[in-house]
Image 1 (cartoon, rainbow, N blue to C red):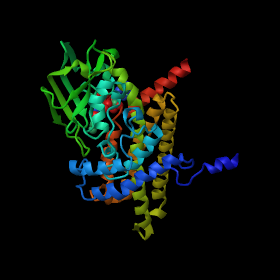
Image 2 (cartoon, protein in one colour):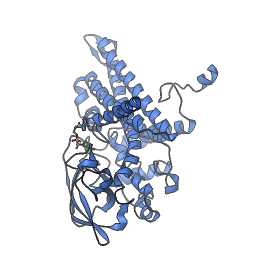
Image 3 (cartoon, rainbow, N blue to C red):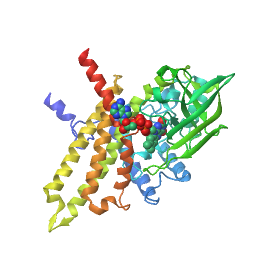
Image 4 (cartoon, rainbow, N blue to C red):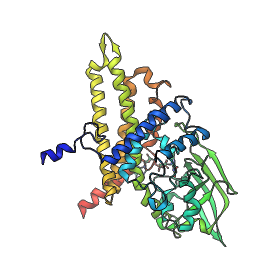
Length: 402
Ligand SMILES: Cc1cc2nc3c(=O)[nH]c(=O)nc-3n(C[C@H](O)[C@H](O)[C@H](O)COP(=O)(O)OP(=O)(O)OC[C@H]3O[C@@H](n4cnc5c(N)ncnc54)[C@H](O)[C@@H]3O)c2cc1C
């Protein structure tokens, strides 16, 4: 028994103690090599704060990723993708975040080929029209427009954007806020109200082409290197066949896919924090002040130790959530725990590591200040930390009461 347990222990496991299945170790190593051989040399030639590679270089990068099988990883095999499980997606997200472009890097489409998940619930004709071109690399990724100026945490109540049926089309009026990728995507998934105000069941989901007459886009300046967009819909006509799912099913569709996304989001945060910690360790080992190495100062050792503890805990929570998702368990609470813990701790870790590096920590010469800004937003994206805690607390409180 003890021998069985010892066999599953691997020193270099991202879990700290327990090893990943062999095929995921191979996948992780393949992503690691790709990042070292292709991505980091390319980004060294790009300006510090560029959101991602320019289109031509991105296309070359994607072609190389596809050759290695790093394509359409999240897309089920029935839809032409690699059908990677959630644990595999976590392994990839963590490794792919280990570059200056950070956790935004995989999201910018480098390991692309994944249509929006709601299209896996679309009709075969809809999937062929909107999903297949992305899997085959003939279209860019899509944007996802849920949040509005009236609020992103509680979209069921906050969505005011309205779609009214008029013959063979819906006419959409209103505005969306904070929509990532709306500057480059060919189309997006837009959630609009078709029913009563305030009702979850009153929201429907539509594919809207970016070039639709009446749709205008304006970038919103934020602290990250990329800009989300404000979208305005002025009598935008969307054919009935662009509605995904039944009328009023939009919210339920979004909810079913958002949970899983939080787990890979957490993994991206962990990748960034791991890189920051490695920079801090290297610096502490070489920098001397008052005749003593920083590494020999207890104040610095504690910063390194706290970061390692938090990183391991975040990784375990994230891998456990992924593991449970792959077993088909309900991971709503696990995903929220992983997301809130990883995003909050990663932010703290990067902040601490910047402190270890002194002035260099905040300089553009180093990637840490960019990760710091990116992680600040990660505490809000995919459901803010307070909202994740609300989900966790509601579940625990109701279970206990029940
Ligand atoms: C860079 C960036 C990119 C984004 N990309 C997208 C995108 O692609 N698509 C999209 O649809 N949205 C996107 N968003 C929007 C994002 O999802 C929202 O900002 C987020 O959900 C919070 O919504 P809000 O900004 O309206 O804040 P609010 O919902 O108004 O919340 C404000 C504050 O109150 C807290 N709060 C809310 N409810 C509670 C509660 N019950 N208890 C305690 N505290 C609470 C929140 O945690 C937050 O701190 C993006 C945002 C940013 C900044």
